[in-house]
Amino acid sequence: MGADERRAIGLARGIARHFEDAGQASLAEFTVKNGRRADVIALDQKGRFTIVEIKTSLADFRSDTKWPEYLEFCDFYFFAVPEDFPQEVLPEDHGLIVADRFDATILRPSAEAPMNTARRKAQTLRFALLAARRLREWTDPAV
Image (cartoon, rainbow, N blue to C red; front, side, top):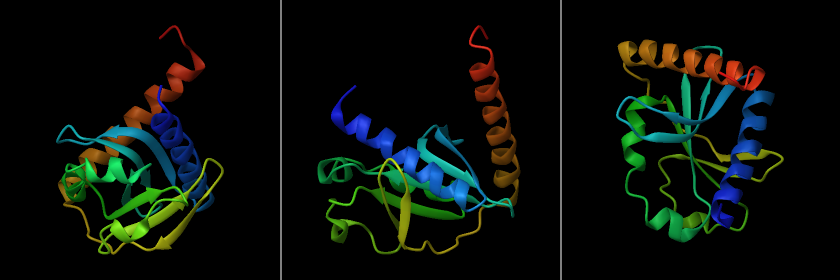
């Protein structure tokens, strides 16, 4: 595991803590219907999804052209970066989170872009099933 991957795992932890404090449930590494894997996805009490794309470095951001493919699978979209990331390069029309392994802070909110209703229902079921499977694997590693 490389340094960028370890850093991304730490950021995902801080982001998850932030969502938990906000009353939302989150999962790391969630694959949306088009096959893309979101770094973090959160579900709020109103059934709305937030996807967070973690960028650990400028090179990581510049080499990624797939992030727009997540937009139809969430109501809110954020980039999350470490504090030393050059934030001015990130698109201003999406939310911005600064995170570390302990917590996260929203610096720029995301505009809401409501998901398609049928897609939301299907994704909510997939979210619940994946969460249940992960819990089962954690409580019974033999599964």
